[in-house]
Length: 372
Image (cartoon, rainbow, N blue to C red):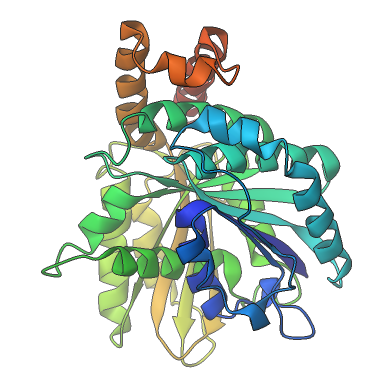
């Protein structure tokens, strides 16, 4: 079983290169090349892609920059969407059985948010039966782009409509988990993100001939309208310490009992293929703070790996806190009329903004209802 990786914008391309370096089976073709497409205007970033990894046509960089604006990225994507979809079609034909797509992109920049949204929409239109997973990276709360909050809200509106699972990666949270180090570089942040993603990329005993990404999506996104997923991982020689750190991390993401979780998956990596014992399973399960209505909220998987550790995927109502900062910031700018002319020139007007705010508020309401 295979899936196609589409890596968009500087953030997506950088993470994509590190994902491919981990040699994920689901993205690897029979000839050793990768089922991957890279899209960005930044030549310096694109030049780092090893040519032997991809088909020669699977990189797109010959298009104007998007100026950090969702609307410009969305408009620019129209000129290239047919060529991108043709390359996707060729990649599907190179697989033994394509289960779906994984898009990796930022919600902050113009290329990541704009192109990411347009490609997501087109893939769902052309291949409605295949799963569609977006790994969407939230910017640091300190700010990377003066209109990042607009980009986040507008992109989330599109992803909520067309994606099957949205893996929300928060740079601020990843940075906090690495805060024990004196200095945290973006390379370290990206390494941690790729480590967290292994639960949807790695083969395991429970799904030996299927795509782990598809299985995680079925478990974690059991309610169609609440489909945001948070990932985490802790690896080291001492498995007991990995479990303790994972429990602390899960508790932190559930607000120490403040937020309810709908469902989750836990993957244990060990030098020998073995499941965690029942006592450890119980300890981890309690930390998720699951809703009462789900009788089987968590599954435990295992895989053989040289580096011992714990990976987890969780769907919980903390999503509101994660998105609220950018939503509130966008509303303040919107009511002041700030930067709206940057969007209106590309046919994204007040109606589109109003629809996006309505979608985000509906996400918050759906989570509150499902986690009651």
